[in-house]
Length: 242
Length: 342
Image 1 (cartoon, rainbow over the protein chains, first blue to last red):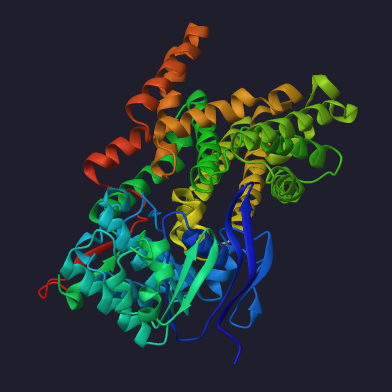
Image 2: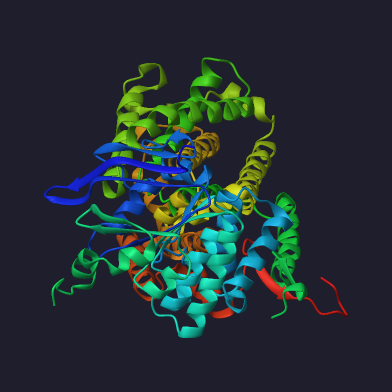
């Protein structure tokens, strides 16, 4: 079976800075993949390459059986990708509900009452319902992160890409977030999740990849990856023989 | 908040009241030939045409982010098309205005393909350069008077209406009608699914693209439609003036600088902004125009003060304080009370 998402030798450099170095990996349909790596390793750039915000210097990206390497971000979204931004990108002059409506109508292909109901349901799920009429520009950072998740969910994606949404949450909020993402995964949505809050990640994902300097340095079962000395050294900054 | 008790609405009491008041004002304005003097009607006609230009520029710059300083290209093109089509084509003036709109859209397509390669300040300068190219090109057409321009022949003017007052009434109603149509079109567009996409582009292009909105196509459509309607307004403006010359037709001051002033002081990115801005502009102009250059100094000072003190314009100030909308675009999530179901 062909992979749902396939990166094939994808490279991207800005001058001397390499953000993706012959990056290759597959994601199967219905899988939940976790991505870890130190700051500046190229994790968010990888999302930008997959979603089309950046285009690679070389390599191919296949999604749902099609080569999307040269497709625009909008086209890839309509093909079923949705993401949250690590640095929130709200539509500041619109309310929280309207932000959700844009995702539901433009990306999710919904209309009228059905779109409104979907937005209300998702806002309830992401605990933003009581801020529905607030301008998105007036939200706190935590609120903006929740709004990122809300929009991604309202887009009704086949592939959901989450970029560091658990940072700054309390223990209880983090538990609720894990449950939300598990529910979405259980509905058959494929997930790629970049996260520094490792325990949240491990509660959801089936597989982990580790990225450093734009290269994939490890891939496999979460437990084995986290215990490997190489990952401990590079990712956690612990000397392997210490 | 309980999920089942919620409903979503796009109307409000203020908007309903505004609609009623707006309809009454419109009726009074339609009846102007029976209560207003000749000079007043002329002034109001001019005001309506400026309001239409400002609403169009606001749609293009305030929503689609296309800050053009070259819309005089289409105003002048419209004026010249009116003259050319009526004089050489023998077309009835109102038909010529409609046809000018179509030609404006056709011209806007290659212009857009060219200037859409430019970003930000380069885009703005590019549009100005294009407008200058239009001006210089029409100054070469000796059949339309070259650099010194020409007048609309009496026969064509009389074909509109036999009497002078008949023509004045018609041109007043055309100006009023066109501004109503433009504002209604902008409102309906912004309320539609495409309007939601356009508002998203206004706020954040990166996020808009990632949510499936085709930014280039949306901007292209807005640019071409704006150009077509601006061309028609231009034709109307020169049907009132009856005389055209390249300098008047392609004046960056008259058709772009004043329009930007109106939109910025009124409130860019809102439908109400251009309406308030147009009223303020005409009040300033009518009270200060006799002072000559001091009038322009005052305009500049007003623009600077408002940009510093109320960056979202006067309407932005009002909306921020009272949370009202005269043209209801926003969605409101409300609790439904069991006694009065909404």
